[in-house]
Length: 243
Ligand code: DX5
Ligand code: ZN
Image 1 (cartoon, rainbow, N blue to C red):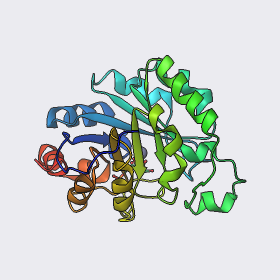
Image 2 (image 1 turned 180 degrees about the vertical axis):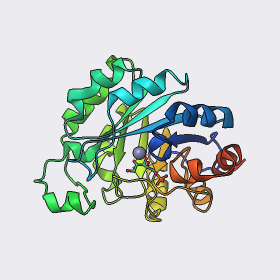
Image 3 (image 1 turned 180 degrees about the horizontal axis):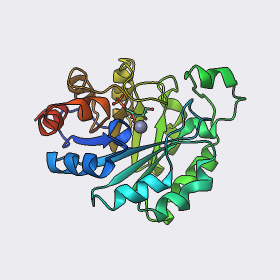
């Protein structure tokens, strides 16, 4: 595996808009306004009420959003058994899926940790995760892995060569508009030391935290509440990119 030195701006930083903070009654307009503002991609948070303590939406909304933009649709699958649903997300036009390492957990799961959003894992079925990543690619999508804030990088190191990107959560997933957890910053640095691909960060990202994330080696920043809440979307995107 290639080891690289952290070099702040060696890659263009991209910004992805998480539609969870968009207006669900006027999602087409919300998407088109982000496209006009210059966003790089859209982030779609699929939640099943099992892997995370919230239920959001599934393929139907993604299919509708696909009609509103040709930008990449990056689907964050916060669901148990994600492998069962890959073809559904491919068929509605998803460009990339993020698969949670926690969905491949081998230790028993304490239901209370899900309710308290503090789910993490230290032992996963890497063969199954790798097989699902390969299958996502066979279906024509990009395939990425995502880990929760309390799940260590070491858990996914064996499968980094099979990932088109790695997403590090900076909140316990389940909701938008939560406070950024600074513990993600040293995780970005540690991952950058062993991984040369796209590193995305998701959860509570705003203008205050973007510079530290980029300096640590993040190349893709995901935002819902900061972006959709900004009065000037274009300026908010530029601020996150550091340009
Ligand atoms: C959290 C989701 C995030 C969320 C980000 O479970 O995975 O993508 O939409 O929202 P903000 O940017 O408001 O924290
Ligand atoms: Zn997300």
